Length: 177
Image 1 (cartoon, rainbow, N blue to C red):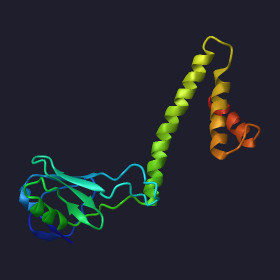
Image 2 (image 1 turned 60 degrees about the horizontal axis):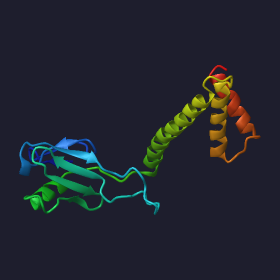
Image 3 (image 1 turned 90 degrees about the vertical axis):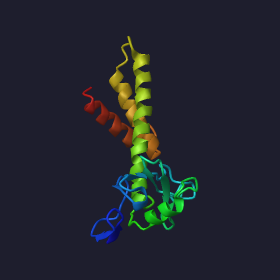
Image 4 (image 1 turned 135 degrees about the horizontal axis):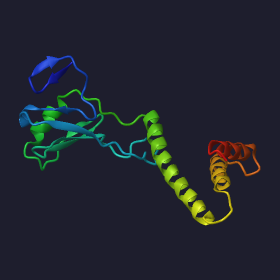
């Protein structure tokens, strides 16, 4: 249960979270939205909290905004003319705006590392193709070598390992060479 600030009636509903919109009495029917501002990179202390706040609520029509910090609530900068009233009404809302969990960090990092890896490998493949244009060097063999070297580098193995041979052969088979 939470206090629906738009009608001052108590309703059964889920807490507000990232991406939701709502209104509060102080700004009338002007809509506020909650944006996820959790950091993309965990801090080096291992707490996975590179920043304290996890969200920003903003009223697009008025430009008023507030930061949310778990355990502390909403903070409205003093530059907003109604900052105390806005903070009070925002803090009366039921919200679920947590820090990222360890599982969310893993997913976040996998997405970022996947993009970076594809970009880097794509660049290396482009170099291999440039070096072998108008030659009799089979590009498929170089592509398989690049894949195998990436695998053994990640695993800490070397080029005479079974891992290298397996990835090399699987890559050749996958590209039809």
